[in-house]
Length: 155
Image (cartoon, rainbow, N blue to C red; front, side):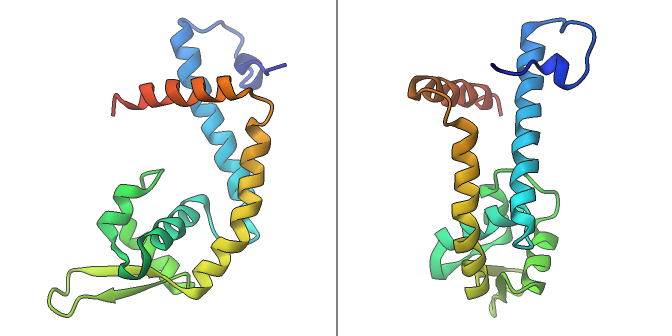
C-alpha cells in the first residue's frame, strides 16, 4: 500500500487542496530518489549531478561540450557549472581544453577514468531505479510519465 505523505512528513492538518498535496508529493519523491541515488554513488566518489555530467559528456563524444551546453542538459540545474566542471577535472573525471582562438571558450570531455566510473555506476543506479517502479503496471508508468511531462510544460 502506498505511504501517505502527511504521515511521512508528520503533518497533522489536511492539505488545503489536493493539488498542494500532489506537488509536495512530487518534491518529496524527487528528494527521496535523489538521496538514494547519491548514497549509491558515494562509493564511486561522485554525486548524482556529477553522474549526469558524465553521461552528458559521454553522449557528446570526442567533440565534448562547453560549460553552457552541459548546464542546459543537466537534469538538476546548478548555479555554477564552471565550478562543478573544475572540481570534476581536478578528480580526473573530465578534461577541459581552452580554445586557442577564443580563450573564453572551454570544452569539457569525459576521460577514461570518467568512463570507468560511469560504466561501473550505471548498472547499480539502473537497478535502484527499476526497483522503485517495478511494482507499477506499464499503464501506470505511462500515465505517470505523461502527467509529469504535463506539469513540466509550465517551465
